Length: 305
Image (tube, rainbow, N blue to C red; front, side):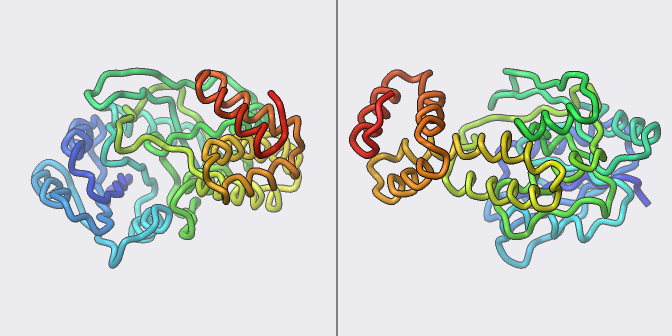
């Protein structure tokens, strides 16, 4: 039996799928299989996967109906019995030694449930446009770092099977709820090397949405209850930051009356000073948006920035 399963979740991911699978063919560690979880795709994704059957040990698992992302990830995880599970999305790629390096670290470290690493961000043509590598941190600094800005990239993650569950009721922020508890339990370890090429393109760019921020707040409030020893830091760092982003998102939809009403409610809850700081801080790079925000704030909130 293979020691590692690489789980790939897909819904209509044909565009970059070949590059994704080729990065697995080239792995220096060979004792793994691929579980391809197809979430009711209507494109050629399945046909492309079948073309790699001679080069990769691939099992195709189909969801019975379209699932939310968290449910689809957990659906796949429930069908895996290897010791370790690694994740890869259809538009991203592993570096050739990704699995080997993480397996080597797993043999040196015992007290972990989640392992992650640095990564390179690439554009649609495969050009590296940025790199992420964590600084060296103590255990407490590691926790505070991710409470201020959660930076665990799904594609870099390897988990001990059975130690992580994905929220089946969320379509966004699934990695936040799945992995941050291991960070707070001091059972997340970091490999200080780039192991993944994470692709940014028009189809997958994360776009701020009120639903996303609502789900983030839900996760952080849940964490504050489960980890009362960290509730102050969660409220001060994570929840406040999400509220800032949420306000900026809502106020940018200034012509939407519902958005204005929600933004007014948030202003009352976090105070005018923090509210203005959130708006100004999010809009300063764009002078035209900033001028628009000034008009909206004056008209709807009687506030000046």
